[in-house]
Amino acid sequence: MKSRHLDGFAVDMKSLSNEWQEFFVNANDGTNEGIKHNTKPFMSVQWHPEHSPGPTDTEFLFDEFVKMMK
Image (cartoon, rainbow, N blue to C red; front, side):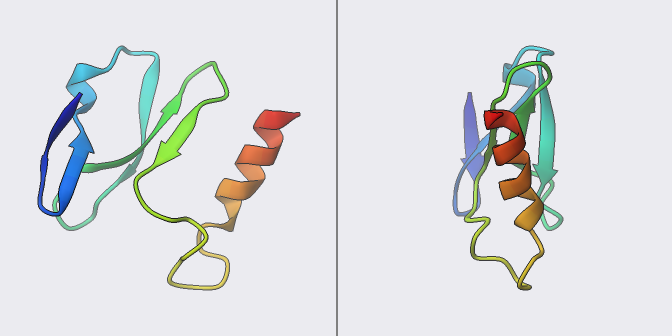
């Protein structure tokens, strides 16, 4: 499920079933940085969304999380 990445590991989308979709892609090297399940309330990112370049750049992830918990 993991492939070598410049500074760690990245999910190889080919290793996942079609129940998953790519959620984020690294603009520099094209590696996967996040996945999201198509029907279940599962998502993941490979960085810290609370530590964003701008004050609210990835705030929507927390809104998505709250929505999934309802």
